[in-house]
Figure 1 (cartoon, rainbow, N blue to C red):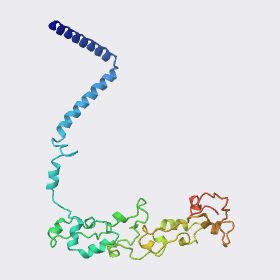
Figure 2 (figure 1 turned 90 degrees about the vertical axis):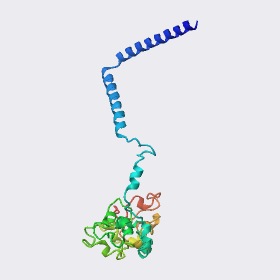
Figure 3 (figure 1 turned 120 degrees about the horizontal axis):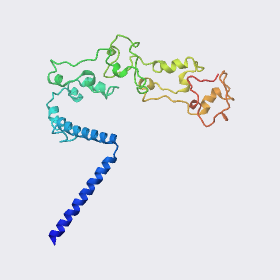
Figure 4 (figure 1 turned 135 degrees about the horizontal axis):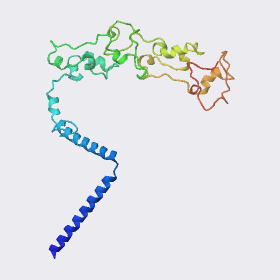
Length: 272
């Protein structure tokens, strides 16, 4: 009885296989020719990818992560070039103390002086570089519109051309060699716009309260700007008592929900 059952099961399995084969043949015949060719191409590319990957990918790839395991030993075997600014403290404590309180306190010594490992090992025979070339400091301080507002910037073609930057500035504690006396020293673009506007004779400090510290550390001591409509109304309000030729508006009805500079650019007001 068991033998008969086994034979029956085998016959059923064979029938299923034959039916499956017939279905696959019919299905393959219905597939468009271009799809068949594309399928063959994809299978070929998959095989090529597997073969090439097995040849090119190192055997130790992925051992410790998404990189070669042997890369760790190669990196360790490389010659040490950078020493870290902490070692500078041992011999140059006067410069370190000066730098700690300066604007360059977060700039590592080796950014400007280059790799220092050999200098630490043989300070008498290996000297570090000093960035005396004029093109070095502008790598960070050349004018670029994308730099943060208040970041010290220059146009090197017109800012004391030819002279090395360190001839005027102490690099470990950089400060302007002369404290700017006027706003135009840093805000030249705004000053040029204001020079052709109706506000040309209005001093900057009339609208912006600016302490002396702003000239030394502008980003940490920002000037104020008018916070109320009544400020501009001192000159432009209908009830203003100031003897000016400024245009007048009724503050109670003239876009009362907004502060004036939200609609009008104060350095070049468009009204006559």
